[in-house]
Image 1 (tube, rainbow, N blue to C red):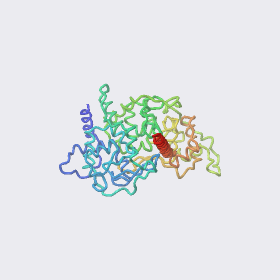
Image 2: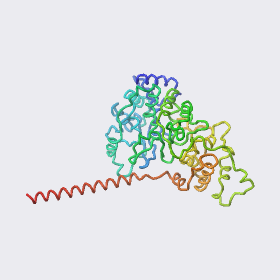
Image 3: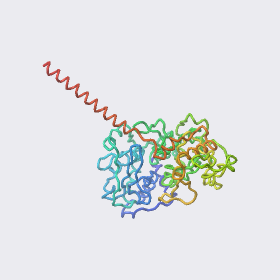
Image 4: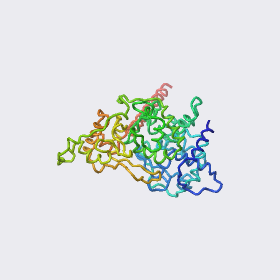
Length: 470
């Protein structure tokens, strides 16, 4: 079965859009393995995390925001002084699939090794060939290093976390399923690491696999439910619509990519073959349905075209612009692109605001984040694409104005029961809800120390009694 998968991957390379060659091919290097590894590294979206905008590919330095603090991506070029150039295949495999560096230090699961553990030995070897011979060495270290607060600065603590939550077993094909399903499962569970973002996590930040792809907050953005549920997920999408969305970031009258999902499409998914995108879509549509009770109908079916222009004609703007009505704010900031009645642009590049999952979901974070930070798309090389991009209003609109505008958009075009709140906007503007995991971990350590001290006191008292009795 896996041999068949490799044939699919090889065929996919023939249809893959041209990606830049980052280094001269070493004499004697296995060109086929390097190119296959390049494709697999693209599927894994390695460049997105291990490169800074405008910087050298895979040289590290990008600070990844996590609930525990920033985790700085390392240099993974084949530099022998600052990268992974001295790694053996076994050491590379341990780092990628088990989260353990060549020096024995543990990685944090911001690097999705829990998903990459699914990658087969053959594909790991191809990735190794690419990183050693297809990436240009960069002999500099990132300007900053990961510096998490105690106790998470003790990397050895991840050894216990791995014992509890890391499944080291590579992907095993399900003989009862089709080749397309297995290929999609292999990619979605592994290199594409869909569950890393779309699956809720428990108090210890491990994925709750019983809620696979059920949707969860991802920092300031919301990674939506993409199970097969008709209301909350993508159950009403056709496989073709989902595959097209994975390539373009747009599905007419359903959704458009923004934030981390737009980055995943631009750096990774849009470069995959049609066969692989269809396989991922086929698998995702088979994931058991999970429904949010608040979704009384499909999140893509809320709202309709409309406006409240009559209410603002001839009405002067208030002296305090924070007191502008939703209709006034929409007319001033949104109507020129999304049209007065929310229909979107005529060429379809800007979506309608009704029949749109962003305004139809019970979680309105993505609507607020789109207003705050806009929507950016890139060409996969770190360059912003030309054309229609939603501008950021972080510096233009106050929290009060965003609350008013957001609620107007929800009322007019989305689920009117979903509200945008002042607390929500302020929290998202400032980086999201702070994690209590650090406090819990420190409290756990204190409790553990007290328990150990109690046991020590008990043991010493017992020894004294035994000595006295003797």
